[in-house]
Image (cartoon, rainbow, N blue to C red; front, side, top):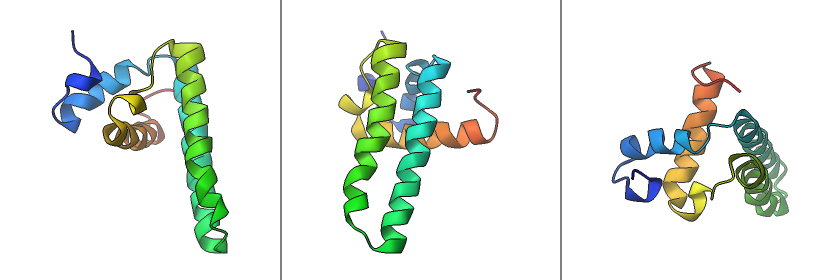
Length: 103
């Protein structure tokens, strides 16, 4: 059985990651969380209000995890492969923006 824990490279991981994000509602929540996290990160840096930076992962992960627990009914890849998961979120967001993945 192929699962994200067994992936040795990001190239192996990403297709498995996408399979764990098959539900459109889950992907939509990832997009909302990722964009909100990026906006908070930018606002925190530009305003030098460093407390914003504490909220960045909370907002980003909260949206994504709701998608997994309520729609996908699976465990987020963050718990299994945190760095690859973060990279996967960024890649999926780019693929959605390019129209390669539908939301």
